[in-house]
Length: 371
Length: 99
Image (tube, rainbow over all chains, first blue to last red; front, side):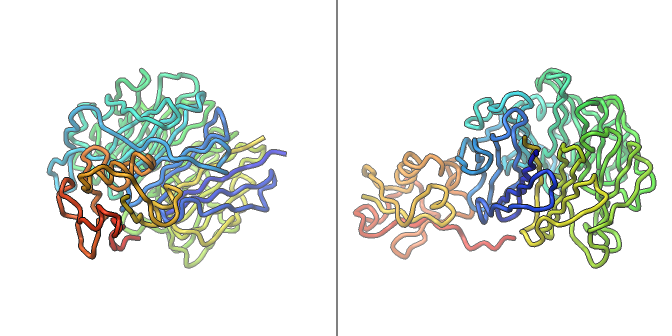
């Protein structure tokens, strides 16, 4: 029977949770790197035992850890992220220009085919690549060098590059997203990039339909249809059917379309999940009820999923990297909260139960389906 | 022999217990001690001082002989008690709150 391995990053360490295919009994390992912020952990699709982890602290900066045995042992690898050339400036909150400066690694995305190749999305927003298992990192400067770069400005969480998606059918195409610049696509393996924000409408910026400046929180894709993208924006759930060339809103009957996470069912490309959050000023579920919403029609028509989730006095948040799906026959859905719960559903969201309840605030959740 | 005391997180990262002892050629300065520390424990590069600027990270402090040496020049001589090994050089995580 297959197994699943859930990789959880929190404000105070990493946790690895494993279960058999039933996903009812869990073994919890951790905290690893206790006391450090773990922004992301992800396994290589080409070698599930190869894991990459982003570890940082306000005191001691950024580290990258690598495991070659599924998380049993770890070794620190390269942690130098140097921008190419003169860094230039981006916009600051007060409208002034501020030099680009490395803060932390938000997201690590291992290559679909090469275990030693991994991409890093960092704050201040830039994309880095390592082809030697994380020992050394090189910026792909064409992204930050896009002409709009000096106009990018941070969202409340910082000017972070938080989403990296590969097109499984086209090795030269990638998608990334930055808060609060928007979404970008490359069709030449990262040399040049174009903003893909047409159709986004953001009332919180001077030109609601601007080319850049949108606070994109997350993008998701199903591997079988890489031209179809789903987006949770600051407000609005969006969909593109042409690889981001244009977007249309699919918030439909959601009770609120603010949120951070969005993901796609492993076997049903039109089944998507979000966790609605009350508003940009109140980062918790509406009415204190934690509800995942599922659409089986690629958006617009949504149903609340509540069985096993707290339906009163729940005021946690679910951050942008904190939802994942496994690829078991009955798709499992996982998400973590700022209250330290990690919830799992082994039946595509119909029923939920907590794997753990009392971790530090959860920053990231990924899952691996293992033979 | 120069004695260096690391904060808990960096001891864990370097996989050491207690003090670290380093052979450092004179003159004994913050820079020469940190260079020797990072040469012996490469995983500490970037954690005490910034990779690019080589400046002390803002929430890291340097103490020795009951003095705060954090704002001294990296090339100033450390006290003779540190250079002779009678006193350790402390690398400390600042009491800075946080979440």
